[in-house]
Image 1 (cartoon, rainbow, N blue to C red):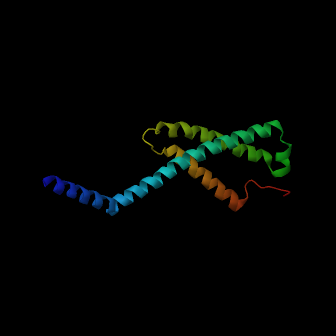
Image 2: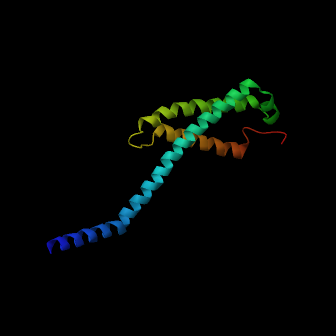
Image 3: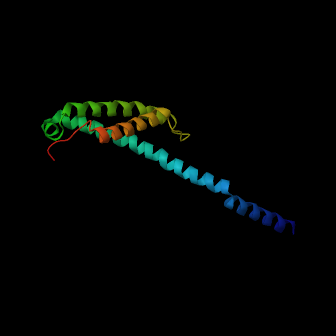
Length: 131
């Protein structure tokens, strides 16, 4: 009989833990944090590869870039800045790999990318021509 009472108490405590708002909130925050963590990784890797590919392509044949951008050299300077900043942020992000920690350097690089994208959109820093 005592086994049934203990198991009923265990079930009751399990049910209350599952419906506890703090537990549900912690689960959701954990899920959001995991998505943000892997999203930051995806962002860093994609920006690194895209800027490296852009620089490689420009060095192969700069003519299309001069047709598309009003100042293709400025565009390449920005790509170099993206490449260097992202390459610097990746080792810091790798350092927190096991604990799934966000690196302040990687988050700052992400914030710089977002700020530049907003400034470019508002002020037309890298302008395209001839669409």
